[in-house]
Image 1 (cartoon, rainbow, N blue to C red):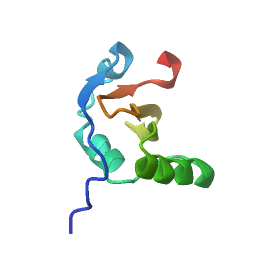
Image 2 (spheres, rainbow, N blue to C red):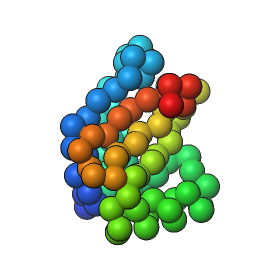
Image 3 (cartoon, rainbow, N blue to C red):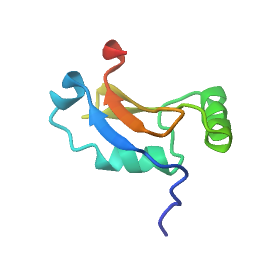
Image 4 (cartoon, rainbow, N blue to C red):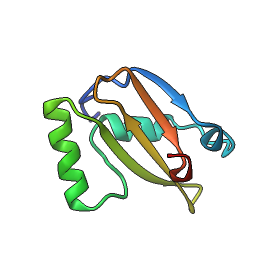
Length: 89
């Protein structure tokens, strides 16, 4: 059973650092937009749940290739979702 899309991603972009990983990010974007916030503490997950309801910024964190952390951020106005490395924030 597929999970429900919780919010629009808008335009999806990746930073140069994220692009340099050579990872296809679709599975992570799918997790993000369906409420699987990845490697966040319970407080941050709850903040995302609230952000979906009230229309503020949504933030997820995932480990790719077994070791590299990426962040996915959807802006409050849902115009853009960015995949980036934490060092690029």
